[in-house]
Amino acid sequence: MTVVVAAVDLGASGGRVVECRVGAGILDLNPVHRFPNRPVLAGGTLHWDVLSLFAELTKGLGAVHDPAAVGIDSWAVDHGLLDAAGALISNPVHYRDRRTAGVREQVSEWVPDGQMWAITGIQPLPFNTSYQLVAMAGSPAIEAASALLLLPDLMGYWLTGEVGAELTNASTTQLLDARTRGWSVDLARRLGIRPEILPPIRQPGTIVGPLRAEAASLPLSLDGIPVVAVASHDTASAVAAVPAAGPDVAYISCGTWSLVGIELSAPVLSDEARLAGFTNEAGIDGTVRFQRNVAGLWLLQECLRTWQALGEGRDLEGLLQRAAAQPARAAVVDPDHAVFLAPGDMPSRLAARCRATGQQPPATREATVRCVIDSLALAHRRAVRSAGALSGVRVAAVHLVGGGAANNMLCQQTADACGVPVLAGPVEATAIGNALVQARALGVDLPDLEAMRRLVRGSQQVRRYGPSGDPSRWDAAEALIGQT
Image 1: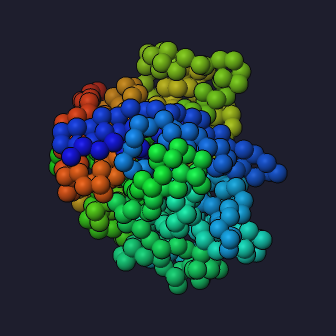
Image 2 (image 1 turned 120 degrees about the horizontal axis):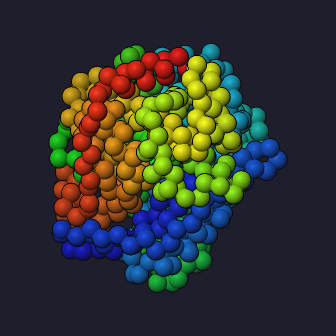
Image 3 (image 1 turned 90 degrees about the horizontal axis):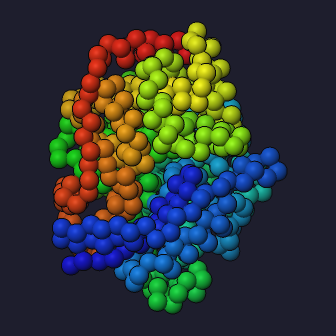
C-alpha cells in the first residue's frame, strides 16, 4: 500500500507544505510550497499573523496532487482562543513577546517550581503556555474564551470544525500531568485558569475529522479527506524520524531552537533534572522526549537579519566558509542567556556578552559567525552529556536532524565538542515524521517506531561526522561559559 499525504510544517521563521509518498520501502518528499512567517508588532505586542499562515497553508494544500490525508505540525506553546461561537478572539501572541516578564516568579509563589515540576515534568521557561495564560488574567479575551487551541489544532479546526488538543503539543503547555498524560485540572485552577477552556486530548495518529473544502477555500477535490492529528509539536515529529538503530543515542533537532535529548519510556522527574534545565515532553507511541532547549540557530538568524538590514551578510555559505578559517573557540557565549531571547541587534549583544565575561569580542562578521557556531556546539555538548548522565544512557552517537543538519561546520564542531560521532540528517525530519504518522493512520504497514525509522534509514541520506581534535580544548571554553 502506498499513499500520498500533505505534511504541513509551520516553523517560527517560515512554513512549508510537502507532498509525501509513503509505502513499503518508499519515502519520497516533494516540497510544493514554502512561505515566510513574519510576526507583526502592533500596539506594543508581538503577534503571529495566523490568517496569513492559514492562507499560505491552504495555497500549499491546493498544490498537492490528490492527497489522501493532511497533517499539521508547528512550534509549541503558542495558541489561539475561541469564543462561545467558535470565532478566534484575537491574533495569537508570539512567545518572544514581553508580556510574560515576571510571571514565572509570580506563579512560583502560588505553586513552587518543585511542585510544578513534580506534576508536569516541564521546565519553567518564561514563555510556557501556562505563564501566557496567567499574564492574560482579567483580560476580556481570557474572560470570553471557551476553548484554547494550540496552533496546529487551530489550523485543523479551521479545516474541519473539530476542537481538540494533540498530546505531544499539549505536553509542552505546563498544564498536562506527566504521569497520566491528561490535563491537570487542579493545577489549572491553582493558576486561575478555567479548566473548561482546555479541550479533549487527542493521541497522535487519530483522525481529527474530514476536511471541509468550502470552509477553507480549497478545491472541492480535497473535500472530505481526513485531517490527521500527527505528532503536532514539530520536535515530536522530527524525533519520530530520527534514523536511530539503537537506544544509546541522543538527538538534536536543530532549527531556530536546538532541542537536545534522549528518547525514554518514562519521564525523569528528579530534582537534578529540573535544576539542569531539562523537560519531559510526550512523543509518539508512549515515548518521552527528555530534552533541553538550546537557543539554536536563532542567534545566527538574527545576526543575518541585522546585517541584511545594513545591506550586508546575504551570502551565508560564504560567511560559514570564512568562519571556518577563524581561530576556534576564540570567543564563546552561553546561547541561552536571557539577553539573546528577544529579536534585535544580535551581533552587538554577542560582543557585549564577550566583554562581560572578559573575552575579546569578535571584530568581523565571520568571527561573529564562528562565535555563534562554537557557542552552539558547546551548548550541544553540555546538553548531551547532561541528558546521558541524568537518564543513565551512555551516549555513543548523536543524531542531528532538521535544518542544522545542512550546516557542515555546526555538525563537525558538535562532533568535536561531544566527542562522539554526529549522524546528520534528514534535513526534512519534521515533514517526514509528520508523513509517517499520517501514513500509518491510513493503513500503511508501519506498526512501530522501529519500522518508521527503518524506512527512514533505508531511504534518506545521513552524513557521518567523526570527532577530531583535543577534547580538553572544549573544557577550556566551558570555563569561559562558566563566567556568564
